[in-house]
Image 1 (cartoon, one colour):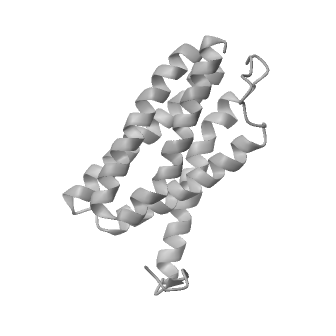
Image 2 (cartoon, helix red, strand yellow):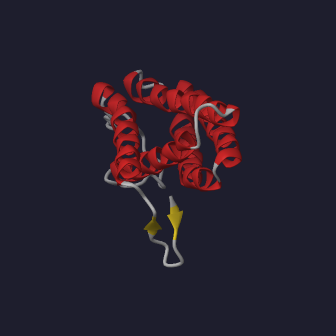
Length: 165
C-alpha cells in the first residue's frame, strides 16, 4: 500500500482492502463489546466542567478503533514471521486488553479509583505500542497517536471524577 502525492491510496489490492476492513470491523466490534455488556451509564458520575458531551464518546471511540484497526493491519501485513511484528502484536494485545478492562471496572463496578489505575497502565501500554509499531511501520505508529492523546485526556477526566473536582 502506498500513498500518491495527492494523498490517495494507490496499488491497494482488493484483498488488502478487504483484510484491512476486517481489522477495522474486528477492532470496533471487540472494542465496543464492554459497553454493550456493562453499559456506559453516566448517571452516577459527578461530571467535571470539562466533561465532553455524551455524543463525543461513541464518535471518538469509533474513530479511534478504526485507526487502531488500520494500524494493526499495517503491522500484521509486514509479516508475522518477523520478531518485531510479533512483539508489536503482543504490545497491541496488552494495551487492548487494558482498554477492554477499563469499562467494566469504571462503569460496571463504578470504581473510578480502580479505573484510574487501569487507565494509567493503559496510557503507558499504548505508548509502548506506539514505539513497537514505529519499528515496523511508522504510519501505524502515527495512527495510534490520537488514541494516546485521548486516553491521556480520559485519564485526566477519570482523575477529576475520582477526586470530585
